[in-house]
Length: 377
Image (tube, one colour):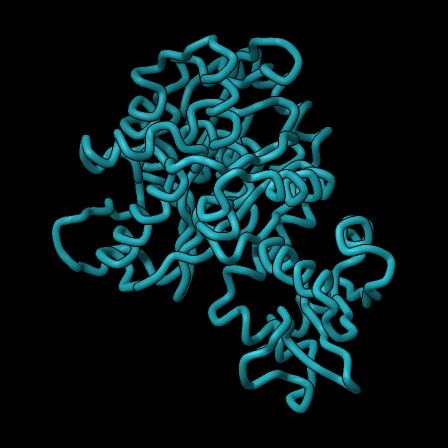
């Protein structure tokens, strides 16, 4: 007997599949304990009895099928189990059928990988405490200024952003955007590069940023979209992406020009914890106040990318994972800037040493210490 209880493993898996359509087996660890989820998937491939949280019998269903090989191995809901989606929300079945084009799945490599990138982005947001259920989020529009976006963090899938009208679909259909995360006072364009280098050199992402800016203005009262989240499998991917940016033939279309702030989110539990911090209201000020005394903080402009200064040394906080700022910092260092120190988490340190060089000292801070300082009320 399996109980569909909010917050349980089976409930979270059903939620992700209802919203995204399919999920890669290789990424089950994003949802929680990887072995527990693997065992659950194995169980749900056979017929099981289900009941609701209140104990009501829901029937016997074979919930999941798994197909494909290697990185294309993917989890789907069975068609016979779709009535269970009613337990999530009355509109969940409709959202699922819309996401999967009527429970139809393409076997093409590009299509599966695209779906997997979207599903992983959704899972990271879900586990960071962000609202991801499309059936409870108000629809976005571009007709008039009208506050629709909730005041709490929420993630809109790329499909919902691209289909507002045919014009926007033509502009953004080929971009790698997986969605948009709205949080108090901010909107992040969300990308998932997985284990590949993110190469940004076309007009697609520039048009996407303009489209999101207009959506945020019309639906969330935001005037500027200058931040993106880049989800990747490891810090090595962040390093390769930065090094690749130096080769961009058109500097005006380089990713740090399109989005002046790009926060790299590792696709693991550390990244999920970082994302949770980035969705706290007024997170930037709270983060800097937690790590720097007031007398160290810079109050005006500076010739170098930094957040504080102490005893003649500039200090940059990389605790927010902003890799776009690292480009500007390294350019300043190449031009002979003053001594610099970088504040970071231990898991960011090897990446920073390789990108900035051994001459830049690093000061490490545990994420537990920062979480305690930022969430203490």
